[in-house]
Length: 295
Image 1 (cartoon, one colour):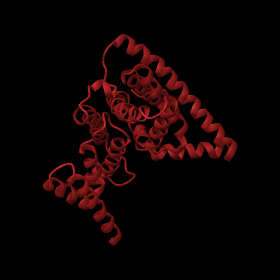
Image 2 (image 1 turned 180 degrees about the vertical axis):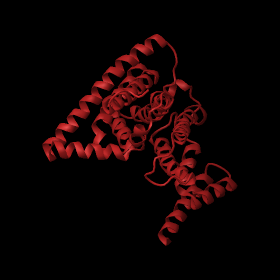
Image 3 (image 1 turned 90 degrees about the vertical axis):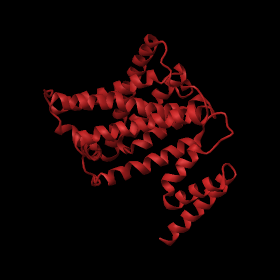
Image 4 (image 1 turned 180 degrees about the horizontal axis):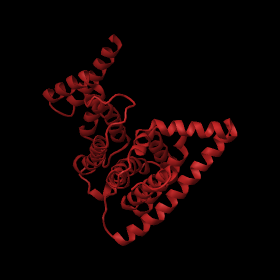
């Protein structure tokens, strides 16, 4: 407890000194107090609103948003009294997912348009040439689904050679069972329930994640390094954020496809289409594996 207080005090002092040079003493004192009381939330927020002399955002803003989201999501679950490892009702999952992805979009829009006074196109939110974007999205979707399938096959093969096929299948099953969505899906049999999940994974999640992982994170990396290294690092970040070791390779390959799609088209729309198609394909194959299609 003493160490935590000492660290919080040190962070608060840094925030006060930094903010004092950029704002009035009253604002600096308020930020310092907030940092001392809740550093994991206040410091990322401070880094987001902190004036910058740079022309565009960079890795600090991406890391600040990452810390903010990873802190507030568990806090929200605790406030809603959702036990760790429990599967919330479908309505709660939908509301939380909408809120989280709306925050992804809001964070990206704020950083680009408010903090740096750039157009929405700077973060990939371009909605021109719809016919062309749909075609690009279809190509990216085919590449993403193929890469996902290839990654899954390679993962199963590697695990089978290492620990045996039966043990590999069991490991994959256990890893999937840890994800709330995989534990929720077998409980959903009504068409309306499956439609809600389809909208969630096919529309809501792709929009929010593409703005954050490609528009913001990949955009920040791309301005500082060559295309292929930026794609690789952003794909690793995308995979790490999903916290699913067994599906690490498929998610990396999907993240790479989505980053290349954004880099070559300059728009997040093809990636959103491809991301949604990949998620819907996974949803379809999941229900196919259960037997006859639910009605």
